Image (cartoon, rainbow, N blue to C red; front, side, top):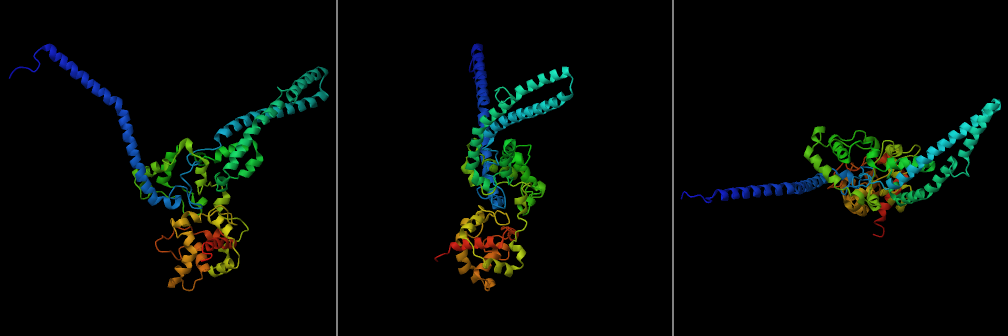
Length: 439
């Protein structure tokens, strides 16, 4: 009973050493595998955060930014967007072009300086002493070497060499510009005027593309994208109403007076950032964007109108507006382009009707609108005196006068009266009618 399990001292020492080594091996194994375990834990936590963020986004953000994050024309910008994540399709070629153009500009400046210096020496030569004339002649001869186009080492020849090197690179960039033209038409460059930059050429175009094709540069944001997203969610974006002609982006976090906790803001941020494809963005991703970012400097888009264009809102009351629109003939093809935001209105605004109406995503379906007006809406006693045209025109210009059951008021923009001419509205009405032709 009183005997030890291991009686010899040697056996006890051996057992102790064995236990110690076993513990150290276990601790070492845990230490080696802990980073991987923690990484897996972080991935699981991040995954759950993204899932929660997706639910919060669908409830709070999709109405303006789109269910898939592609934005809604005239309402809010895309977040699922190569530009938003800094994928610049021009960065590689622009780096090469910019480097050569800066070197060329430096040689051109040296050429101009040498020419000015030569002219000054020629003027000085007239009244110079004989000794000074000899010096001037030598200095002019040295400058002439620098300005000799036949000398491959001259400044002039160097400038011409850069033209030769730049030509294929500029042609390559022109091909990229042509390939993304559909996105440019939708405002890929934030509404900044590309044509003057192209006309000016040189560094102006290179710097323009570098500045306007990446969101963080557009916003002059010094931090990273995660900070931009979370800060905007927390505190809103003062001044956005100047660009979108609607209520500005408000604070969503409780710290800013909104409804969301900080952890919910973090979840939405993680969900948005999860759209990033890194180096795998393509031009097809770019073409899916319905609305690109706008800048305050974009006066044309921000103003939502163009001087000298008579909009529907200036025609008087609804009766006068209906009379003016119905007196015109609309083109359904042009109406479709206006409806989808592919074509600007006469007042230079870009609409986003299809973002909500196509397929009945967040508003009555486009393809059912006209037949439902005739067969359903006008059966409502409140609309007994309406014609289909009057109903549609009022729905566009004063959308909250009558809200279809199942849809919320206040969702459709309230400022179309200042963005549409009577002819624009006639085109759109012809497009909506076209779904019911032959019925």
